[in-house]
Image (cartoon, rainbow, N blue to C red; front, side, top):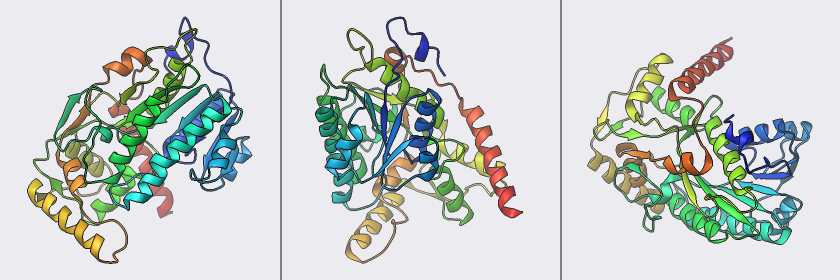
Length: 353
C-alpha cells in the first residue's frame, strides 16, 4: 500500500465505520477486504445477502438503492461512504440506468446528509467525458458528456455532477474514474473477452492500433482509500474535495495487442478478423433498432457506443490523482497480466480435473 496512506504529515488515517455500496461486486469486494484488514467496522449495501461476508463480521444490508429507508439506515453511524454500486453496461433501458445511477446516488446523498456522514467517495467512470472521439492523454478539464448513444455514461455523468455539487464543509465528496478495472478473479471484462474469442465472435474494429488505459483492481482500491484520506485532511480538506480524478495504471496499451497476447498465453487463437469502424457503427445502429422494435433478449452483438469504444483511443492523464491523492499505481500491467494468466490457468486446470 502506498506510504501516503499512513505517512501523510497532517492526516490521521480514517479508522471509523465505513459503508460500501455494491460491496459484493468485483471492486467492492476488494475494497471491503482492505477495510476489514485495517480493522474497520464495515457495512455493505447490496441487493442480495452475502453469507461469506457476514461470517467475517461484515454487516450486510440486502436492499436496493431505490429503498431510501434502507439506504439511510446503512448510512447511520458511518464516517465514510464508498458509493461503488451502479448499473453498468452498453445496453438497456434508459430508465433502469437512471433509476440505479442517478436516483440511487441521490438516495445515498440524502442518507449521508441525514445521518451526518463526513466523507463520500463516489466511483464514477471515464466514460462520463465521452464525446465520440479519441481520448488521448486527456485530463479532468474535459467537459462531462451531454450526448451519448448509451445510457450508462449519461446517467453516471448526471450522478457525478450531483455528487461533486454536494461537496460541503459537513459532507466532503470526491469522484474517481477508474478505467477498465481488471485482475485475477475479474468476473466481467476478461471472462467476456475469452468467451467471445472462443466462440469466434471477436473482431478487431478499426485499425487495431488504438491505445487504452486499464487499472488493476488493487490499484483502484488504493485510489479509493487515498481519496478518503485526502478528504479527511484536517483542519481543512485537501484539494481533492469536490473534484473528479481519472484512475488508471498509467500505462496505455494497444488494446488488441494486449487482448491477443492474453489469448495466446491461454492457448486460444488470437483475434485476426477485422471490421471497418464505419461498418461496425452501422451494424451497431441496425442492432439497436432491431432490439428496440423486437422482443429480443440480451444485449445486441454490437452497438454504436461499443463500436467507438473498441476502435478509439481511451487513455488519460493521471497527474492530478498523483498530485492531490498521492496515487501511484503499485501493480504494473506486466505484473498484473502475469498474475491474471496464472490465475486463469489454475482455474482451467481445476475445472478439467
